[in-house]
Structure formats: C-alpha cells, structure tokens
Image 1 (spheres, rainbow, N blue to C red):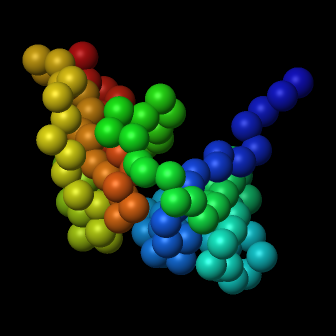
Image 2: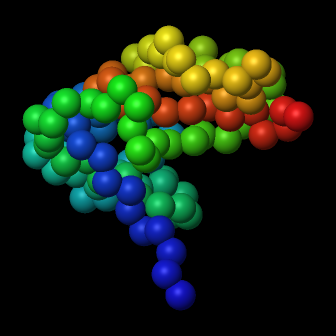
Length: 123
C-alpha cells in the first residue's frame, strides 16, 4: 500500500521557505540543519508527511495545480491561524475563484506559493 511520504516544493530561497514552514507547521529539519539548495522538513512528533524544499528558479504559478490545504477545527481557529501565518510572513492572496460563502482563505507563503486555510466545520 502506498502513502504520501514527502511533499516536494520549489523555493527560490530554501532557507527562507524552511523558516516559514517550520514555524507554520511545527516541523523540524530532518537532518538537523537547512541546506541552501535542498532540505527536508518533518513533523516534530514524527507523524505525517515530510515537506522537501528544493532550490528552484521557476516562477510561481498564479493558479497552481497542486497546493496545500491546511485544516482548522472551526472558524475561530481558522481566523487565529490566518493571523498567525500572516505574522510569520504569509500574505493574503486576491483570489479570483472564491465561491459565495467560502470555507477557505487563500494565503501565499513568503516564496509566493499559494495555500489554503480551511474551516472544516463550515457548511
């Protein structure tokens, strides 16, 4: 049976991306340090997929085919997490595909990669 071991994402500045995602997700560098060209972050508690960050010069896609959905327990937690992520360096994205009553907020990490913060109790 297959399972997701690592999600791989490009970053212009691997160290900057690693700093954001370690603080956002509570992950730690697998090898104890962050390399400028490639690093793998893993959950501090050992449960869940890793996040590999590789140096890339490809431009960020405005509407990527693959992105993160980060789940929250309810609307209050979603609001708090969005504020926390913005304080870590994320920014709000002017998303042109919001439905009328969205359960998600689109943010971008410091590298410009969009991701969603989802209220899992919404409708």
